[in-house]
Image (cartoon, rainbow, N blue to C red):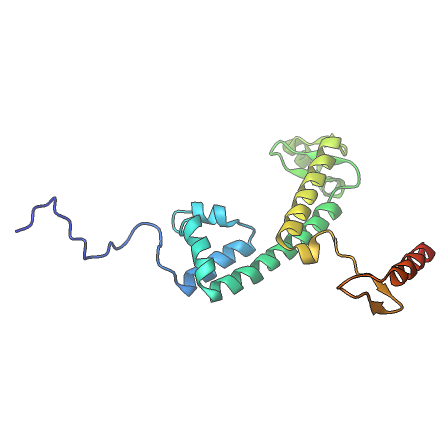
Length: 191
């Protein structure tokens, strides 16, 4: 007869806790969260998700997950860039009104309200403030930097130089002084 303190280690624990075994379905759920803008760190902090270390281990061990993750990260990055345009385009052009509930109202929205609705909303006119403009700039710059860091080829600064002369690429093994002089001359002429 076993004592109550003896534990049967042969029976796997069922039910609560974080998932520890890889499954394609779980990888799909993680990738869906990536697309919405969540980081692996935030996903790993969720109670019903595997921890961050497990996710990175799975990425290195499972080709399906790795390929899907890469594709979905690109999708998230494209979404970030679309948000940059939206943030820049949705900044109001003039006076905005702030309601008691903290909601911002555009001028056209306020004109459509009755006098009583305006009074109940407790609207206060505010103009474009440097604080609001700086907040938008920070939101845009943060997304652009994140996009450039995540996908350098598509969104990062170009640091690649393609040197050609007369339509031919220069030899990789070394540069002939005459070819280099021609390339420099052509470059100066193009300025």
